[in-house]
Image 1 (cartoon, rainbow, N blue to C red):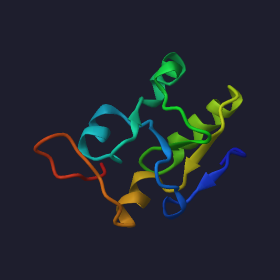
Image 2 (tube, one colour; image 1 turned 90 degrees about the horizontal axis):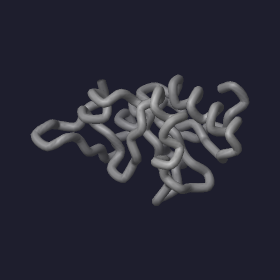
Image 3 (tube, helix red, strand yellow; image 1 turned 120 degrees about the vertical axis):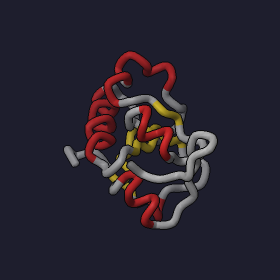
Image 4 (cartoon, rainbow, N blue to C red; image 1 turned 30 degrees about the vertical axis):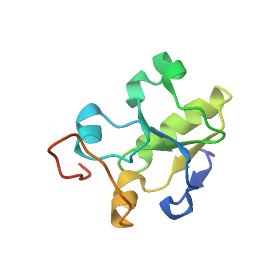
Length: 108
């Protein structure tokens, strides 16, 4: 997507630095434990809050928003990789998810 490297959820390395750019309600419903949440619209103003990683793996619901975020981050000189298929692919692969207390993790 837009010349940005992509990676399958199956190929993500253990301990990868993950940035989740979905909206607050999506994050609350289900996310990757250990990921850092910064909604897409907040990324430019919150560069200091991004996880440190080389590369930085970016995820959203399906891979579209994360692809845009990864392209923008790459333009800023940050080595960013889009997680292909996003959280939908993550959940379909049976990967573990966390959610806000009292919620069963799901992708919305």
